[in-house]
Amino acid sequence: MTMLNYLYYLAGGLIIFILLIILIIIIYHLQYKRRNRIFEQKKKEWEEILFQYLNDDLSLEKTAAVMNDSYFYLYDFLKPYLKNLRGDDFEKLRQLVQKNKMIDFFLLKLKKGNREEKIKAAAFLGKVREKRALPLLKDYLNSEDKSLMTASIWAIADIGEQEFFFRS
Amino acid sequence: MDAEKMNKILIAEDDASISRLIAYKFEKEDYEIKVIEAGDKVLAEIKSDSYDALVLDLMLPVLDGMQVLKRIRKAEIKLPILVLSAKSQEEDILKALSAGADEYLTKPFRPDELLLRVKKMLGD
Image (cartoon, rainbow over all chains, first blue to last red; front, top):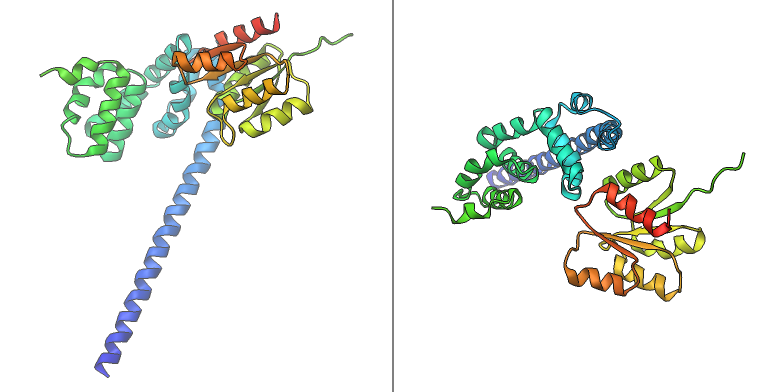
């Protein structure tokens, strides 16, 4: 009888555990879908504005006024342009992220954010070649967190300060 | 009133953000644009519709840009082709030009320069 009770409890515990895992997966999936939906909405809103700005049809001030929130979404949105554009167009993107305080936001995240935020901040600041990030990025080269260390190496390389690796 | 014929450009580029930016730039200059994201559809598209030029990325899904380029030239289609690619090694550029590309532009790029090079190819 005691053995049977024990088996009942074990089976019950297992069922609850499986249900919990399913619940976590559902919540994660819903959050992922919600994030994608928000991103797609914002992308649609920002894209036309950005193209007008890059084509000199909209001022820096007006563009920065529209693109001044949701910096993590904004980073995902700007990533392909930061990667694929150069010259005047890249400079315009840099001016935009300076004007809308995105660089300041990510400098703060690089210093005080959680692990994920620091990694994303390192990648962003590298892409926009923000030299003020270099001292912190250099500190993270000694981080035990391999992802943060790797993100910092790439960021320093993007900024173009290779000699940083060899300084004492 | 006679409407002037618009030049029709096919963009083969798998990064939708970049192809939309290129399309925006060209449409502003009165070009007609069609975008294709996978390499295997390019040849069929060129055969089914008449285009004045092709902007071709080399790293396309399903069939890469170099194979697309070779197939177009093998089919003796004399369409002006500009390769737009992140591959910036001299060897890659020479390979593409030998395979029949008319122009080669490396990423990162400037949309203005792309537009000028396409105009030059078309003799505009």
